[in-house]
Length: 336
Image 1 (cartoon, one colour):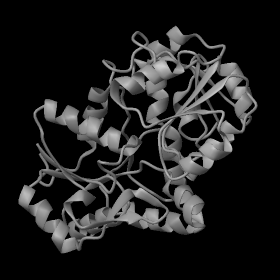
Image 2 (cartoon, rainbow, N blue to C red):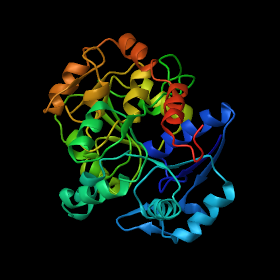
Image 3 (spheres, one colour):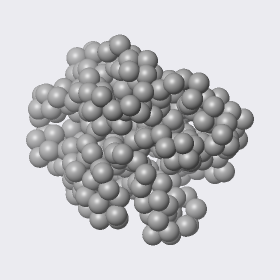
Image 4 (cartoon, rainbow, N blue to C red):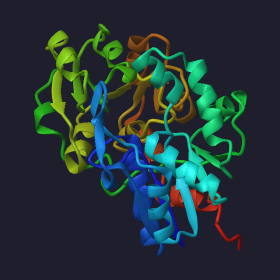
């Protein structure tokens, strides 16, 4: 099958959306499918205000459509709700090309936190954007229920996976974390306001706090919390070694729909502490972590969990299963 994926989030960005799409793309290619990615780097693009790491492209629908038509896809998937994907949506609707979409981020809450635009107004856009889609793919039961409550229809499950050859409990531990006085509390992700990172940094939980990642809030937060260890972005084996060196993984976000880093941490044998919100409450079990409105309470409880149970549970998340779910949800241009 020839599959075209349109996404506003793509390399050189590195975040959960990009990593999920790329992991599924690689699985699809390994399964024999031909996959093309339509992304902002193919067009003139500009840095996003307040978040220059994100590049935004605003091509016309006709311009995007020329690339879609030239690829001659059997199925089209529109992954995000940004400006380039908006053009792809317009072209597909105008030309009666069926497509699927996905809901990766709590976009209304994200926009409200970064711009002040009320989430209720953004939900109107979300309903409109996804209405023509044959299926709307999302990762957890909580998000499916929330989308349904806001009038988004045709929502289907699309789970996430872990690279189990990389993220496993056995292996080296990050050398920069070797001499830290424990317990070692780790955060991995963007350093940005929507990740609620300050809630973690401000806790009085005893031990060492380690931050892996980069983003627009890093300068301000590292100056405010100089006692934390700021390692910047880590990838591949270095990231896996950082997970293994931690005693607990802390996920303070209130706006994520899943949290790929959560299952990566568990696959490395690290229990998870988080708030009882969408995302963590769907994937963190009583045996693998703790959820509490008090993050310090969650951290203390998570530290009592068995690392072997965490690793065993994390190993159940497969990118091949994710790719199979993605395939089954697609809307072929010519039904079989």
